[in-house]
Image (cartoon, rainbow, N blue to C red; front, side, top):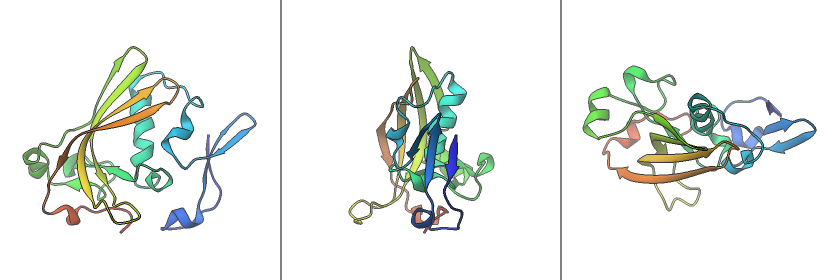
Length: 160
């Protein structure tokens, strides 16, 4: 169960804390790694829900990944955040989400928009990624390729 400590508007990281509560254990959620060994993922749908928690516009600020998913404008459940016109999505070679299972690992392919790091060394970027999720919530990510998009600043994001 996820629980909010307080409620406010952006910037949420300054005023909100997110907790994972399981039985008597209460753990602050501040990293994608906090779930390892604390969750059970049984199928592809749960694996997709799990990785999307890290990039959902309302929740992504709680995680160290600092990214939102990029969608075709016509099929974006989080419109307007992360929308790219359908023709640009295709022209840039962005990928729609796919999930497959190989034994105890779920492999998720999708396109993410990463925010700049706090030091400003790494700027905004779009990348096609492959995410690996084990049944116990262990998570890792591999960047397959970065995408140059000259209108990256036009992609709407929930924070700045």
